[in-house]
Image (cartoon, rainbow, N blue to C red; front, side, top):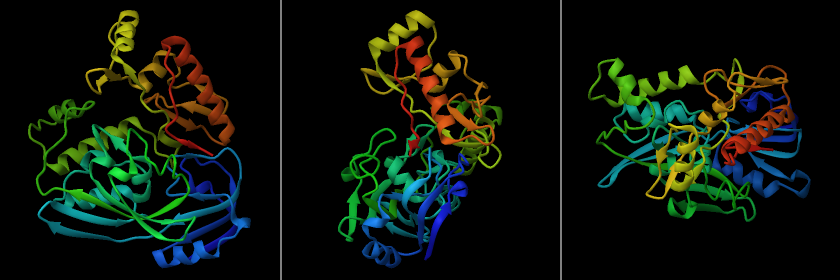
Length: 337
């Protein structure tokens, strides 16, 4: 266990915002977490559960206690229904994806190279290239900060939706996730119909990819589009892609011609927020020390020395322009603290 006061969080948020928290506690086991929870007092509030900080934007010092999981380990169990992989919440998510692909446990490969920890996958319902964490999450284990009791939740109880869960909403900072169990398959069924996956496979003359080939293609696509947080601070996709009624989509087509979209169902279409931001002229532009990435307009970056308020100011300016041009509200995916 690690317990620090007046702790700098710059290395614990991928935007690289230079802020501190009053207290920082890192635990390596459920027993340590239970000990911590039973010792917390009102002086430690408010509490913040922080993983890898890859989806967090701090706008000021945090005047409370940050709880950080360093629970490691993973165990795979073969069952008649598939492979159940139980992972510690402090494991790096992409390390787990790599482990799955290398050991013929399939279902996570499209989520390759998403930054963050295992615990965050269950909070954020991370997703990319036609897949979401909810597709493979079987159950989530956690400790209730209000009661100090260990809890277990099914996929359904977490109420997953696009980049949402009860952990991100109603249960925010109430539960500390300790383990996540994923249900994986021995049979590889590639998901190739999102973005430019098929085009990239064709460039490599790959007609029927293996899981390793699909993972490598997705990693290469992400590296091409997204900046390295160690070089230019960012939190990946800053905004969620809005879902609009089909009538609104058809209205946009009438105004702007060819509009990229992904059909959600018979009545709704998902419009790429990055495309709209690009159409508003923001790609590659800056507002003070905050900017929009030159290759992916969905990504806001710290140009160097930016504060959280600088990123928020850029976010607000972009939201206004998108609303004015398209009549659509875009919402941050990043948690703003």
